[in-house]
Each structure stands twice: as structure tokens, then as C-alpha cells.
Amino acid sequence: DAKTTQPTSMDCAEGRAANLPCNHSTISGNEYVYWYRQIHSQGPQYIIHGLKNNETNEMASLIITEDRKSSTLILPHATLRDTAVYYCIVRVAGARGTSYDKVIFGPGTSLSVIP
Amino acid sequence: NAGVTQTPKFRILKIGQSMTLQCTQDMNHNYMYWYRQDPGMGLKLIYYSVGAGITDKGEVPNGYNVSRSTTEDFPLRLELAAPSQTSVYFCASSGRGRIYNEQFFGPGTRLTVL
Image (cartoon, rainbow over all chains, first blue to last red; front, side, top):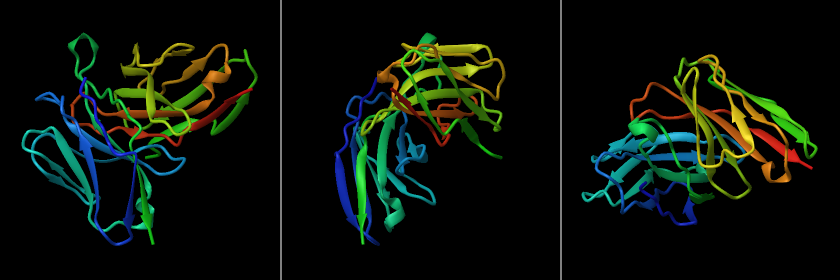
């Protein structure tokens, strides 16, 4: 199973871009990179995912390096409401050869957006 | 759609008591999951289900049981509560087994065992 490493915490000034890095050097060719976030006391929330190409949606952008060993989540204009723990996750295949959404969450990066 | 709902929101148990955490989703998702989150830690998968009648263990299944008799419901049972089970429990669901499906999480149940 591919594992991920993220910084424990980061700060970002309100209105600036927040760039959250993630290393996944053992990722397999068919594994996706997912990002979730968890605002205090709430359930995690899906942000974005990608395989090889860079992805963008209304919440964020995901930049994956060409060798796929690392990625960066970009929040283009961070607000105070973006203060949360951000989880970088690589999907693993399920038991009995069945692919399913077995997601393993690590400790994540605690992002603090500062006024 | 209400999404994923969990009951109760809070519960205090005494050691040795039993309880069932309820989880319901109204998105017709095949896949459902139970996680626990200890203070300051990431989520750990307890059990999951890929459809009605099918369940399997996750990372930390000891002390828990699940059942999946319908698509909508995935209750988590604690038979003999222990202080080590003090945690926040999240239920989640996702659509058919396409590998890029996102998981939708419920608001959580905060359980304290004294």
C-alpha cells in the first residue's frame, strides 16, 4: 500500500495561495491521489483527486509531478474558513482483488489561515 | 438528500455496556464505511461494506461488529464497551466501485466510555 507523508502543520495568510505538499514515493501506476479536509469536529470533506494530470475544480487545484511521487494541493485564495486538517491519500486496492474505496487516512497537515 | 446521517450525536457509556451506532445514507450508495478518530489523530477504518449482506474488516475491527441488511443502513455494534473505544466515530458512503468515487461522511458520533 502506498503511504503518504505530509508536513504536520502550515500557516498561510488570508487571501494568499496555500500550497500543501504530499509525498507518495511508493505509489503504484493505477493508484489515485485524493485530498480530503476536516474542519474542526466535522466529518471529512472530499476536495479533489487525480491520477497523472493536473486537476482543478471550484475548491482547489491538484498538481502531480511527472514521476507521480509527490503532489501539491493549491487553495488559490485561502480564507479563514479553509482552516482545517488536510489529508493526502492514495487509494489502495481491496481484498480478494476487488477494487473499492478503501481509504487510509494519515495524520494530515493542519493548515491555519491567519488574518 | 440528507446525505449520511448518524445517531446519536453524543453518548456516554459505562465499561461493559453495549450500544449500536446508527448510520443511514439516502444516496443509494453501495459502499459504506465506519471509521474512528482518536484525539489529534487521523481516521482509522473499522469495518466496511461493499453491498447489502457483505461486510469486511478494516484496520481496527476488534471490539466491534457490523451488519448490512439494506443498502441504506450500516449499524456499528459495540458489545462490551472499553475506555479504549472512547473516540469519534464517522460513517461514510460512496457510489459503485469506480475507483475515483469520493466518500461522503456523516457528522460523527462522539462516544465516551467511563
